[in-house]
Image (cartoon, rainbow over the protein chains, first blue to last red):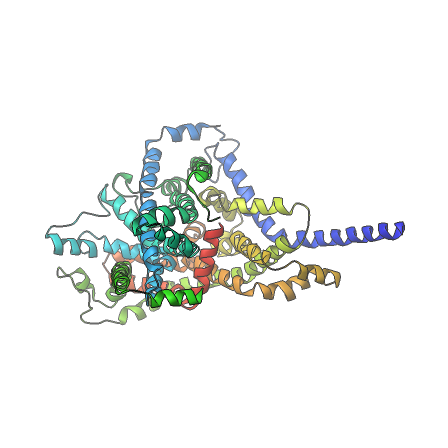
Length: 307
Length: 289
């Protein structure tokens, strides 16, 4: 009896060991990929960020400690691109508000509303480069769609959207809201559909009107979606690059359109200051980390769940 | 639930019908504004250069010119761009789809020590900005001599895609483990268990994820522009972007627009065909994430 038991135990552990071997083998590929293309580059970038490395010279011979980080903190251009990047983030709440209003509208049972939803989603799946090119044209000072419309309505010439230090920011914000609206609508719609109808019916019996239903039921109950969109919007917002690269290739008048990643790219690949670029990348990483952390700690204060 | 819906629609008063009509109209106006730049892109690809640049604004091409599309295809670099993008997509989707689904199966159905550690490490990479790793990766690929080929875009993809692993693993947790346990007792090999039981079970979500991945590869601009040094290996998006700077000089906007239209069509078609699945998987990752 006892020996039999020990034997099963032994056999079990043999089977478990076999399972472990296969289990590990099956995840080996992404794990090796993680080591080669993530872990190693991160460690490497961290060391490089403390040198005046240009991609060719030796990192150890050009070790400068924290100098790059200190230089960055006094680099006016760096502060400027941080400012620009933050200004673009005004688009996040604008997009969320528009998306929520549209989603509430689409949530009514109406024929043909699905086609409209599809239309709002088209910019999301379209190539960023292609739509940025189109919008360059929309924003064109002399012949653009927008200025033509402004002239037709007001009789005055519209602003130099992509050339002016102020208007370029508005232009980029408009573009980003346009590109991302579809995603937010879809997510809000699925959030709205998960709200039980009884909530509204009960509140209506209590005499609540449409606006207070929206304020006291809809907004709190889609707050998990709002939270997700905020986190994703901020993480993505810190990394805006391609649309700037396409629409304002030089970073705009006085670098007024450049973002953090744009400056990083400029330094690392155009000036070959790869150590400096890596330091910037790490500060960016820390920035994203802090903002995400703040978001998660604030979460309990305003994010509600249905149960 | 269905009966309740019916009831409520029967009860719909004229007042709520009027509200419906107004809401619909407003959403429709917004939709027109959303799509208008893209419609204008299509229309202007049929215009003449003079019409686009004329002082009198017009939307309808006069005369309609279809020649820009064949002109785009006659430019060797455009077709080469499409070929390069497909050369990246094909092995990545097959190889990466295989490694990702295999890993997802292992993470959700097999037991081994260190499983959670590895999984968390992979998840953490989703939060690391690409900007942090792009410089070392660029130097690494240069040292290996890969920047003269498509390898920097292909090889990393073959190892699997973390967001797909995450998504498929979530999906598999809803499938009972008893199938796996029964298969283990029957002495079924682990690879066979993946291949003949779980792969068919996750076929649908895997396909959706692969479509999304394809769209990602097709639309990717950042990685190719950093890693690919030789024009011969430029992918489609890089080619479009260079068209934009090359042909804007002599204001050949119809050509640029035609090239952009062509570059958008494949992802749009995929989206139209698989809309339900794509939106579903988007919504799931949003609500769970």
